[in-house]
Image: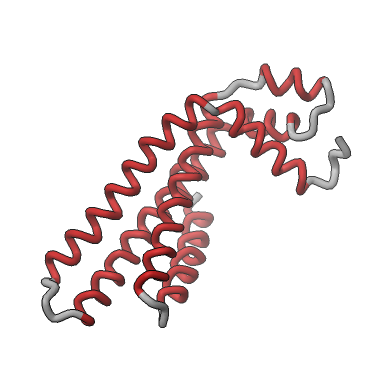
Length: 167
């Protein structure tokens, strides 16, 4: 997990930092929003997988419904899936969004003489925290109530990219 987290953190940071270079403030805010959304999405996936058991997917697999086998594998690996989605990707997104917030605050401070450094930092970090925590809270409700649909959709996505399963 350490190595995976390290590599993913480098990739996320590299993508976000290079994207921020030379782009306008609205584009930087869109990238920041995307990183926050990605963290929320992976949090939803991690929770949805841990809420499910294999019963419904076993019935689907017996009817050869595409994606059911992959859904079973996801549920059987719920601990690892949750760890990767919630802890690795979710935490990396939170850290990267915080760093991006600091970079955006610095940009605002450099461009405007009336913005106090402390105020800019507090406002940006507060928005990031509010969107992240609020989004994850709403996402948890969605993940719990729609967990079967989420896991089955993921199974179908994995099946689409799988070469082994014909149906």
